[in-house]
Image (cartoon, rainbow, N blue to C red):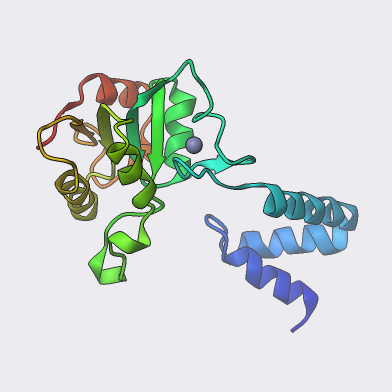
Length: 197
Ligand SMILES: [Zn+2]
């Protein structure tokens, strides 16, 4: 395969890039601005080497824990559970949440072969078992799979109600998740969160 075509094939797999944009970017890097290709390669290599998942919450981290888990000014005992890192980024951008997070890296989806073992659930349940969590806010997509995931997480909690659980998503655009909501919507959804059981 020609280098141009090969690069284009890889770019096309990235979210948000169709055939035309992949072609434009590949031409830009290989033909018009080859010096930018080297910079991009270096940045990709550095990111691949230094960035990984936070051992506690699943966010991106450079050390063992991410900046949010290390921030003592945040309420580390209130944990907002999201599907993906971009959801966390959207919540952070809105400024609506000053607690901690847990990123599942997906949601339950039997049709796509995604069961509990495929999700980043174990570190969350370990935090709960250590008594480090008072409140869980389930900020998952407002659809059947999001609901099934909320149900599963709730079922695994220790009995006795030591962990308060609430759910946001009802006020968010139908079918959309946290990522697609604006700051005001996110804030009112968090403020208006209601007990989930
Ligand atoms: Zn973290």
